[in-house]
Image 1 (tube, rainbow, N blue to C red):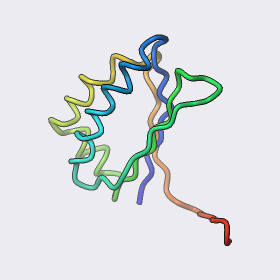
Image 2 (spheres, helix red, strand yellow):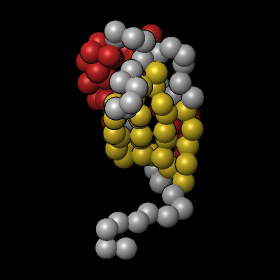
Image 3 (cartoon, rainbow, N blue to C red):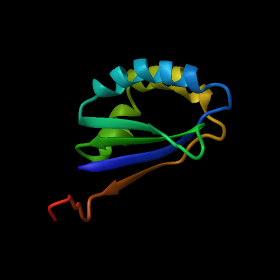
Image 4 (spheres, rainbow, N blue to C red):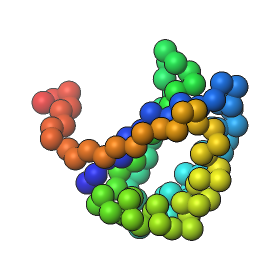
Length: 102
């Protein structure tokens, strides 16, 4: 499993529009091969900043599959105009996971 993570700096005053657009965009990414799940969280200290976490089966499912798809073009149309500056997207692999009983 690969975890994609990005801090999304949304233009001031565009937060409601961004969240509405994301409601549609999530169906686009969810239809992509290798997609497992995502979460979108809003920062409490900086309400214009969102944390996007997406789980993929493999790195290539995101970097080649999704980004090379027609779905990605729709994702871009819906979301990319909301960012300032454009976010950095990075990928991680699991090293350790701990729960309450651990």
